[in-house]
Image 1 (cartoon, helix red, strand yellow):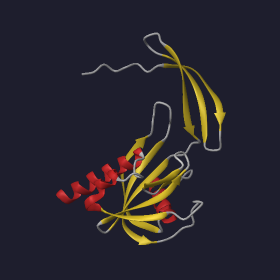
Image 2 (image 1 turned 90 degrees about the horizontal axis):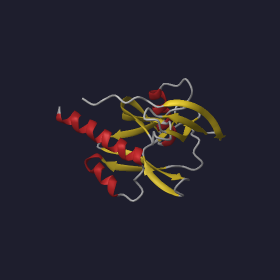
Image 3 (image 1 turned 30 degrees about the vertical axis):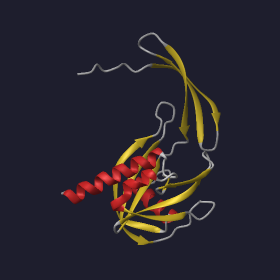
Length: 186
């Protein structure tokens, strides 16, 4: 059995920068072994996110969307922020309607992920969407998103696509594949 580590003591927290989406904090820590360090962490402004893996018949649906940080288009699953006081499944269905023009009658939470938790305090809930129906809502995207249909039986081949490499998309792919395979096997 492993020993439970003692969490470091937080000596001071200071916001050193702020944007409309994030706060950057400087955090002074004292570790139990006597080491002191200053870390910086990025905090989203109080909102969690959701990523949806839509299943339509024998296919999964993806979008191609511009990603400003890498200055290129990225293939991935619909995603977005959960509004204040909005249920995560309601947010998932809303994002589906905004980004791909479908709603889902069946939504299943697959997992909750963190992204770079050493310095980024962000969570994303991965949701499988099934029993889709046509329903379009106006979204906040600056341009229409390209809808891409991909066969479920070859979904692992997405890993060979040059524009499908964002870690949360890869995680969602494996989570959905495992869930769908277990359901078929039972």
